[in-house]
Amino acid sequence: MIPLAEPNLNGNESKFLQKCISSGYVSSTGPYIKEFEDKLSLLTGGKYTVSTSSGTSALHLALKSYEIGYGDIVIVPAYSFVASANSVSMSGASPWFIDIESKSWTLDCNLLDEQLSSETFWKGDHIFHNKTGQKIACIMPVNTLGIVCNIDAVEQIAKKYNLKVIIDGAASIGSEYMESKIAKNITGLITFSFNGNKIVTTGGGGSVVGNDEKLMELIKEKSGTGKRFSGSYNHTVIGYNHKMTNVEAAIGCAQLDRVDEFIYNKRKIHERYNHAIKNFPGLSPIPCPEWSLSSSWMSGIQVNRKIYPNIHKITEYLHSKDIEAKLFWQNLSNQVPYKKHLSSKTDVTEKVANEFIALPCSTNLDEDSQDIIINKFFEALKISI
Image (cartoon, rainbow, N blue to C red; front, side, top):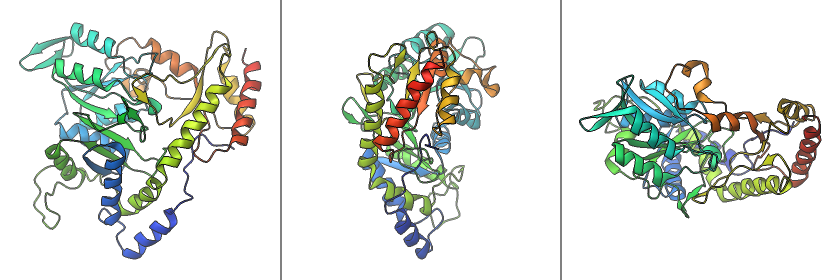
C-alpha cells in the first residue's frame, strides 16, 4: 500500500534517541526540548516557542492563556480537522462555524464580518451573540492543508470587534505569508502539530508560537503544572501538563535538520499532481491564494461531482490497487458533537468536503510511484462517470 503521508525517519532520529535515552532525560526536561523550540522559532519567525504534547493541546493552551472558557464563543472554519473544534470544547467554550472561501479554502473573512455585524450586539467592550447571549471571544482561522489564511483580514476583523486570534497552523510548518516567515508579524498566536502524518513529526507533539513575551511565559507555565520556577513546588497558575518530552523533541530535532528537503519534496509532489490534471475537464488543483506560499502538506485533486458523480468509486478503485486515497475532512457543523452549535451556511465547505480526494504525498514518495498513482487515478475516473 502506498500510504497517504508517512513519516520520513531516515536521518539522525535513531542517533538522537539513543543519546537521549543514554542521558536519562526522557521526560519533560532535557536539552533537546530547548534545541527543538529554538529551531522552530528560527523556522517560523516567531520570537517565542513553547513545545506541547499535541497540536490539540497547543490550541487548548492558547485558548486558556487568553482566559477563554465557559460562556464564550470561538469562531472556527467549518472545513478543518476536528481538533480545532475539540480544543474549543475542551476549554469550555463553544465553536461558531463559518464557511470557507473557494479561492483559498480558508476562513471566509467577508462572510465572517457580515455574520458578526448582523448576528451580534455590543455590550461594553465586547460583542455577544443575539440568540445565545454568549460573548464572542476569539477567531481561530485554520491554515488549510498548509495554505495560510488571510492573516491581515483576520486581524483587521479581530481589531474591529475586539477579538483574540489563534491561528490553527497545524499543517503549515514551512508555509509563508506575504513572502515572510509565517509567524514573524502575527499579533496573536499560532499553533503547529507534529503528528506522524505531518511534514515534521515528533511522533506526537505540537507547539505554540507567538511574539508577546509575557503571554508566552504564561503559556510555558500552563504547559506544565503551573510552576514559575522549576525547582519550586509553588504554583502560580493552573497548569495542564501539556509538555513535550525530551524523547519526542530528539526526534523533532533530527526532523528539523532536514525540513528544507521535506518541504521541497512536498511542493514538488504537489506540482506534479497539478501538472497531470492541467486543462482536464472536471478536475481542479488545491487553490493557491496570492498571499500564501503553502507548505503543501497534503496533496490531492478536487473532482467535480456533476461530471464524476460516483466519486467513491475512485477511492475504492485506488484502494484496490494498494493506493491510499480518501475524501478528506468533512463539514464540522455536521459532525455529531457539533450539530446543535452555531453555524453560517456552509456551501463551499460542503462542496470541498464532497469533492476533494487526498492522494499520497509522503516526503519520500518517488516519481515512479507517483506516476503509478496518477495513471491509476485516471483509470478510476472512467468508472466514476
